[in-house]
Length: 58
Image (tube, rainbow, N blue to C red; front, top):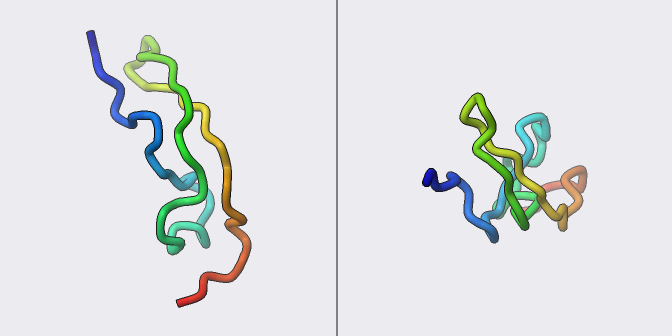
């Protein structure tokens, strides 16, 4: 059995959310997963919990 690389509860940021990469703790949480797919990748369901367009404050 192959283990998936991101366990449930992991905080993540989508690769195309350029501004969000600077936000500590990510913008979503992994809640479920499926895989591995035939190409070895995994699919994740995430819950977005933060506004990634809001300005990042120190």
